[in-house]
Length: 120
Image (cartoon, rainbow, N blue to C red; front, side, top):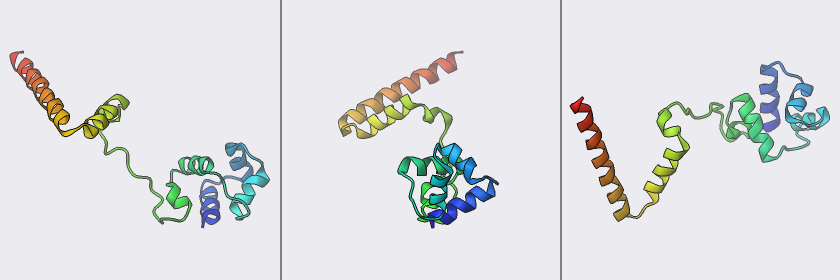
């Protein structure tokens, strides 16, 4: 399945074996072996190919027929901030009592902000 999908994706972009080999930093013969099933790329190369063709690794490997990667646009920009992500991760992993304390602090900060907005 992988060799067929790889070839189909390459042809859709009208690329040659040499184009792909150059992109991956390997020989043309090395790339050709991927498409004819004589060799399998390592996981880093599979990830690189999936990103290049904008498909999932599962699609490349034949685990699904849906090539579309999950949408990242459903996540608000503010939540893509690594520091916020870390905060939410720590909040989710905190013991119940600590989580309740943090949520109370959040409510206080939020109501303080609402009050300042009304005063303007």
